Amino acid sequence: MKQSFRSENRKSVAVGAGCTYKGSMRVLGIETSCDETGVAIYDGELGLMAHVLYSQAHIHAEYGGVVPEIASRDHVRKLVPLLDECLEQAGCNRSNIDGIAYTSGPGLVGALLVGAAAGRAIAQALDVPAVGVHHMEGHLLAPLLEEEPPQFPFVALLVSGGHSMLVEVREIGVYRVLGETLDDAAGEAFDKTAKLLGLGYPGGPVLAKAAETGDPAKFRFPRPMTDRPGLEFSFSGLKTHTRNLWNRHSGDVNAKADIAAGFQRAVVDTMVIKCRRAMQQTRCGQLVIAGGVGANLELRETLQRAGKKYGWSVSYPRIEFCTDNGAMIAYAGYHRLQAGESEPDVIRARPRWPLHELMATTHPK
Ligand code: KG4
Ligand code: ZN
Figure 1 (cartoon, rainbow, N blue to C red):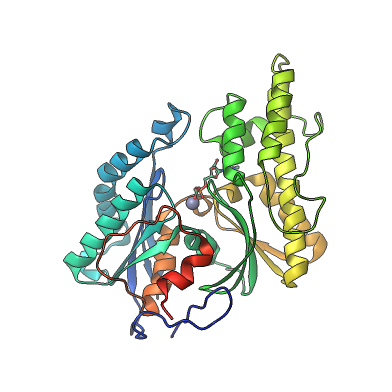
Figure 2: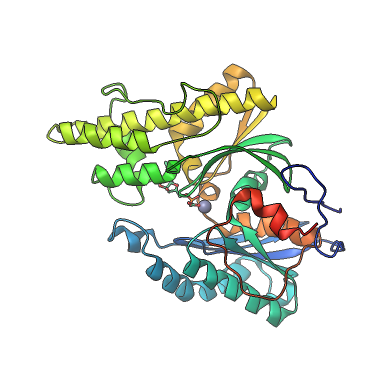
């Protein structure tokens, strides 16, 4: 099937040299944009054949956040053993691979270069095409790996450590950013707040855990950017509010859990309000939650309830495909390669790569 990718303003954009791949491809995906090394194999006919993941979180925990140089070096150490493990799990060998997909941005430049260099080298050795994938496109498409995938068009709440956005997805490759964060991303707000409360790293899961025993109504928290129209997010004010609360109540034994619960509830409420607006604005009936913060159970459950109430279907990837993984990169890369997209044989990392530039940059008119 010929897949065409179109830019945000819906102008048609030629894909690669215009030639589509004949037959079903088997694509090896590599993810190294931050602190997870992920490798997966996706086959157009058989689906996801294997995926393996190694998290460096325990190494960075000691420093309270990701140390870029350590991340790059650890990707170098882990990538080749993970590639072998993935091939073994899939029951195939290198000669069965028809294409390579690697994350080329956004992310940490050194970490991205490890995956890009490995991806390019493998592609050259096997004489197969390779494509650099936009990490956020990977997250956006991850829900399509599930057995009951969402139907197009859908609105995606894309919330990760570096991004918070609402995106209208008309079909694979046709994205319109409806609203973004003006400052901190949702995951970043979780990480910084967890650090402030002395909960450790990575912040999202540990803060969610602490919130389980807290009373979300004990302290008042603002719902940022909800008192004015629009689909933008802003979490820095919430962070400052939380810091001030903690400075006043850090002596109280229960305050930590109560503040964690109140903070989480405020973030979730804010997202639900914005999602509702996005669904009304687009008249879309399908909402998708993607990205690392999509692993948050309170967010998943609250949006599920909102979906029931307002009449939308809500879907999300399994927890392990919310956070970074190779499967989403293999899947996104599969669609781009299958469409005939190919890139010059250069090792390229794009640490900053806005999603709205994705089509214009990789699909010359
Ligand atoms: O998508 P992801 O794995 O990496 C990026 O692309 O950034 O997202 C990581 C972010 C981190 O900020 C992490 O704290 C957050 O997702 N996260 C969570 C949860 N699990 C991961 N946030 C809230 N609740 C969680 N359960
Ligand atoms: Zn991510």
